[in-house]
Amino acid sequence: MKLTDLELEMLAGEHGRARQWAVRHQQQVGRMFDAADTVAVAQAHMMADPESLGEAGVALVEGFAALPEADRRVRVPMITDPRGVDLTCYEPLGQTEEMANLERRFVAACRAMGILMTDTCINYQTIMPPVLGEHMAYGDTGVVIYSNSVCGARSNFEGGPSALAAGLTGRTPRYGLHLDEHRRATRRYRVHAQPADLMDWGLLGATIGRMAGSYWEVPVIEGIEGIPGSDALKHFGAAMASFGSTPLFHLAGITPECPTLAAVGGDALPATDITAEDIAALRAPFEARGDRLDVVVFAAPQLSLVEMGQVAALCRGRHRHPDTALIVCTPPGVYADAVRMGHVAEIEAFGGRVLQGTCFYQQYAREIGQANGWTRLLSNSAKIVNILGGYGYRPALATMADCIASAEAGRVL
Amino acid sequence: MTRTLTCHPGIGPTVTGPALVAQDNFSARYDLDRIAGVFSRPQHALYGQSYRDVVLVLNTAKGGVATAWMLHEMTARGVAPLAIVLNRANTILAQGAALANMALVDRFADGDVTTLIATGDHVTVDPSQGLVTILGGA
Image (cartoon, rainbow over all chains, first blue to last red; front, side, top):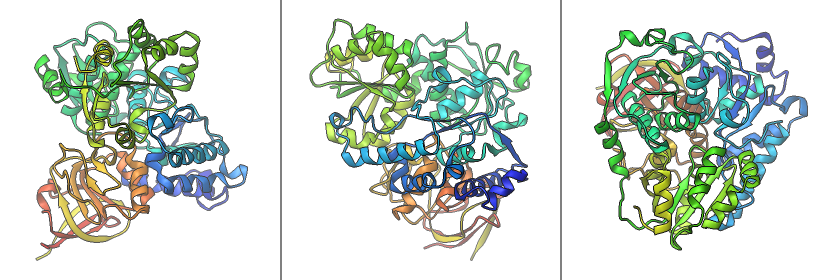
């Protein structure tokens, strides 16, 4: 992988130990994917919750943060994915002081490096949406798939270490989705069942993701009626990325790189039909009608201001069952707006908790479940029900309205 | 009798250990109880089995980005696989292996690696050369 003169200086240690580590890391990854060189990125976005980092990951970043200012500060705007502990609300969830302290240490290290603590996985709705053709080093699969597909940005899945390396160098290895040849469609799907709500959009994305089944497949999808909104495509992409490790899709006639099927090579591919039966088959393991319900979670992705308003409206004049909890996760910026607009008060009057800057599956979900005795969980997010089976939950899926009604009834309706 | 498989050059050191093989995919977040050191997702083909100090042989990566940090965290606590061998890695597995200094290889010339190696085979994974040598059964 060819390096710039500045990268060679970094590799030689002339810009400090952190940047030297960053270039070495990028060399290893770039070689694995035969990257010819690196490309400048406009932003970096880091997934780094303390559960994933552990003591070892936090100590690594603290080591960088302790360097002289010139050696430790990131070179491009760098933002963060949801945190693992809402420091304004962790004891009520059963999170420990040890977890909170790990979180505090990591946040302090990030701030010392000049990282902006946005704590969000919906930065494309709330912070600074990418521009068509802009190269990024984004983490969180939902961020990457939305930014690539809906905005036309160019990013691979950059896990926390690689996003950090990109922040430190301002560049990332040029492979995968930075290259035109990896953005052409490889699978073509024809949709015969129109999504009616956010849960349906997640289910459709999950169905396509499971069928595509690889980071290196690019689905092009036809048959979508009308123009989906941002929250719909958010759930669609997040679920597709979760079930398929898929980083990019094209919607024929809708997304910016795909004005026609032919523009992405989709006209030359055989079409696979997506039917209501395919979607029902994906949903079947997440049915739980009649079961006693421990917790309803709205998260993964975090809720937009519009979704906060929808949940609040459903909560109005009602109250949760005493044995069923409600948790809502939203970015700090949206939280502030939602307080101002009265949405948080309405959700709290229902008996719900609104967490700021976290996402449920990224905040020690196993330990929270054990501390509260929660196993049966209900959500409208196809992504979160896909993840939480491995964390000891029995996750089920329902629409936003049915989730609130179930929380009120204490059982899955 | 030994047999050597050729793959794309990968990441990490040369290691030798027993293989644990399944026709399934991998995510540290989705599939593992990282404290207990076992596969914890009930639907996974390796559910309940320990992944500690084995050469994991699976199909591809799935899910999100957390594995990029988690392999490092698992290695630091000494509850980690020796190596991960896949038909096709995604970017996250590569980034995680680089941080953790864990052996990772993919893209085999001989076909589906989950059918070429059996659970219990002792294998040497040489990422720098892009070679996996099957030394025989345990």
